[in-house]
Length: 494
Image (cartoon, rainbow, N blue to C red; front, top):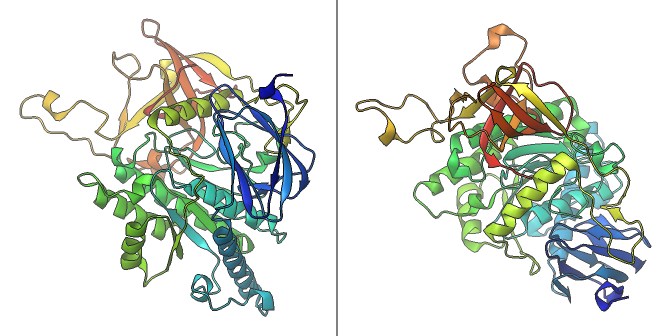
């Protein structure tokens, strides 16, 4: 057996973590030999190989010490005893006290002794409200990892909590595709095995055998990577998500006590660029209003912390938390490759190959059975599917308009796309197929489709303009006749 495929044993002391990074085309298996360990808050089971691929970058942390066996050849691997996990653990304890107090208040019960907050700054300001947390931080600060840790600790607490995790970072896409905003109630630990499924697999795009399939996300389509592309649309979709989350809470008061954690794009922390500061301030405000935020966590960014304290410190709790030293700087090329992994996983599922010497193994705790999907490639008529673009910035520049003409399309206006027109931009485009319009005709309004959730995503793989037909790739075989779709700026080719 070659040296690179030999299993290597790592002995970790208490409160240390083994960090690793993978190159493209490689995989890794980690087995917990003895002790207790977790990956971003999700506990590992002893003697069970966990597989990682698609350029995954992650860490195995232990509170009490453990021994792990690593098979494969990561590009980077090392053990660190400098982690922010104590701070994150204290946050979880504070949030757990808030949940217990909120539940006691709901039932009119006395608050258990262990749920009385201590006099620390972290806990003293919290009332009998569940934690509704907004996480802000610059690029490469580990915001999504912190979200996963806090959510995983909540579902591991043994209290039956199912917190809502909301992702308003379109560059990540959450449980859907890049360009989406989404939210879901989390009932079990979120696995980490690949950046192709950063928050686990959703029931709409994964095999029925997966335990993580209980996730049924609510999805809206923004369609672009950057908030500045159409900040008005971002604002509206954030508020739509908030309305839906609040409706769920109204129907399930006990579920409400588990709280909500909101992951945000790095652009919310960056004030560079003309007009960007105004946009991000409005979008931060939109998140606070939409999700009724009562805690803002700022990850490792002094200036942003001061700004949030000044703007919101008198209205809610603002806390600065440390950034992990294990956070990796991700370049543009890496993010583009991740988008391709995500689209491929959405259409085909994801099967991470086991390194030589490993038989079986699991992806995020799920057994490797039936991981491959069979997408459907169908030829449809142009008239079968109604396609829109949102807003004016995807149209011709003002200089291309006739002399004396002014633009009449707003950033929020749906513009019909004709596939028969050259330059329609539909070839290889990712389209979001929307839920049906509200059946009540009296409720029709011009921008109604902006408020429709997403049923799923398709990709246009061929345009036959002479015959007015297009070929689309879809993860399911459902008919597209009479459906409405929105195209953004994302494209994908196999």
